[in-house]
Image 1 (cartoon, rainbow, N blue to C red):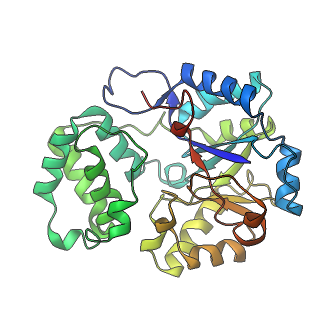
Image 2: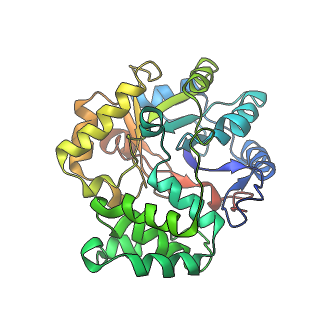
Length: 308
């Protein structure tokens, strides 16, 4: 099976001239490409794999997953799946629902979509100090991040600084300073899928999963902090999670983004499986050995999946 990861699927927003997203027209084309060349995993087939380890006869079938619960998933993706008689799994970070704030990771996306990457990198370089970025020399963060993205100049390093290198003690304040310096306005009201719309998606066959509370890099947190992140997310999504096949998705997703504590917490809390990001098929060994680190391809690795 081939699990595919999506984030933003939408139309152009003129207010975000540099924003990277998969255009809805290309999403439709990619679904047609998948249908013609691979076919899609039926939900019963997926549940048979999760419960018994039984793979579909066609081992190239496609499984659709969507991260971060942005409003475009309800406005654009959900109608396409319904009209094509398809289903997907949607992973939800819950802090925006409990605190009515846009997550730092998404504030970074919006900044990158609105301003020149070179200007953003110059600005953040003036604000941060060495003390704020203790992980700047960690090679896995430097060499294994944003390798499949085609970002504008300056964007990848700007994102590495604020998503990977910086201490969380400083990150929100640094982003606040950048936003203030640019006089940039970010609204939370229509950025995420409302909870009642997530309920609508679940009633119509979609699976809703946990994506932590604040979308942190879990490998930077201790055991108790990680458990709080996942537990808080579960509490908000309690009525939406399938108790039998409760699922989770690692924020950021690479092998460097979580650790053994994360896996132990997921097992302890009764999750059935979770996804990471690794460009390969799901196979029998994954059922037996890696249920909490199932691989996914980025959609941009397939026809019609390049970001606009």
